Length: 183
Image (cartoon, rainbow, N blue to C red; front, side):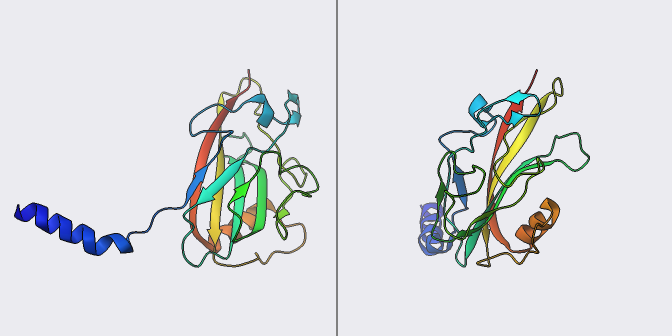
């Protein structure tokens, strides 16, 4: 009985202080599951629809002033991976990006949000397109809760600099790692 009482008291007094982790979910992609042709790049020998998936997040930490979203393939045979999408300066009151919002031009993005040039050389979502016969690639869709409203970046920054500034201002992040293999 004493053990139960002690546990009950600890739970009662600490539960208001337990923070929930930032959470990322999607109706289009899933952790450890293969993506569909909808999220495959249209070019470089791939014939997909190049649609960014629906992504939603919750439980942002206190002090969040904006969000950034990145999509990265660490398995690309480049020596430095492959950046498929980077969206920065997403307002703190936004908690979802609808499917297809990553189209070129960014007209559907939330006000103030910007897409950074990806490794395909375009300012939009660039879907999966690993080399034929290269095996399964991992695509890390990550939302970052940031401590600043806008990232301080020069015009046309490199993906590495954007990643650095995101990490330097990150309060929390959450990732869905989807897969794709091209035969």
